[in-house]
Amino acid sequence: MEPNERMVKAKQQVSQHRREFSCREVDEPQDDRVPPGQHVVNNFPVLDLGCKPEIVLAEWALSIDGCVANPLTWDWEAFQRQPQVQLTADFHCVTSWSMLDNEWGGVKFQHLLDLVRPLPEAKYVLFEAFDEYTTNVSLKVCNDDDVLLATHWSGRPLTRDHGGPVRVIIPKRYGWKGAKWVKKITFSECDQKGFWEVRGYSNTALPWDNDRYG
Image (cartoon, rainbow, N blue to C red):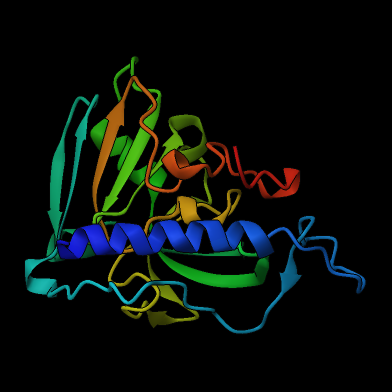
């Protein structure tokens, strides 16, 4: 079996395991910012299967294509020249934990939209990662002032464990919609489901609706 086939098989097993425990409710009083079925953690749990790509910044690139007027590719230096912002947002993982008041740093997705200028037919966005992970989100969801191409957490560069050098943060959706180690963003008129979505996870992933599975 090829290495990528083994990774996919392992992820499928984890997907089934998550179905068994990720919707558990908690009995203790909850902060009103915590969606149903979630509990607050103070650390930053690492969820992976040991497949963490080695990314050399001198070789890193992010390409944006599809239904856009101005496709582009950023190397690391070009990415660093974009306007950098800081924002505070909560993070909700489908496996039932939430972290509140995270301090993120990076480039706003809306800045990217201003540069590439999605065409009228563009309705969806597909994110691809260096580990071959994919996830899909509607363009409407991405066009929000808290969606970020994140490079920093709590004032420090994102580690490899947490998707560095660049990951996507979409606070109003469960965390799996924000691809770690992002390398490509494709705008499309058609919705193309990502890795977890084709394996039964929700296509919309709304934490406040407990919207975990399709």
